Image 1 (cartoon, one colour):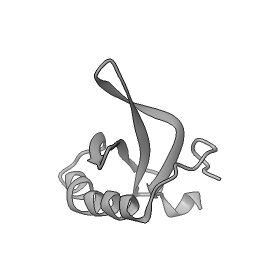
Image 2: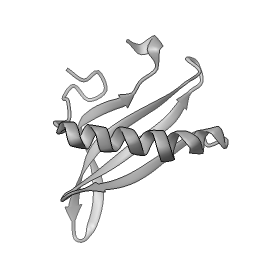
Image 3: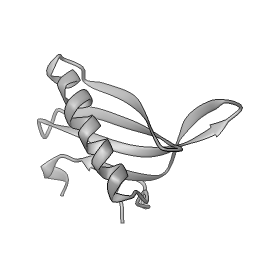
Length: 93
């Protein structure tokens, strides 16, 4: 069960690995440059994902939640009914 939405986003091991690598190489370095919250889009195969990352000031750690996107009229929006915590603050566990 996912504490954020109540429903875990179903991802393949490949997708989890790709998203984790993107987080490690793109998202995390942005936060070292002073970013406090941001959204990132990532296309893997035929599925589009949004990564929402922010700094949890209370825990002093980064958090990153992944959502599957849905396309409507040529625009992608995050479907927040399911999510996957790629990175969560240790104080949340």
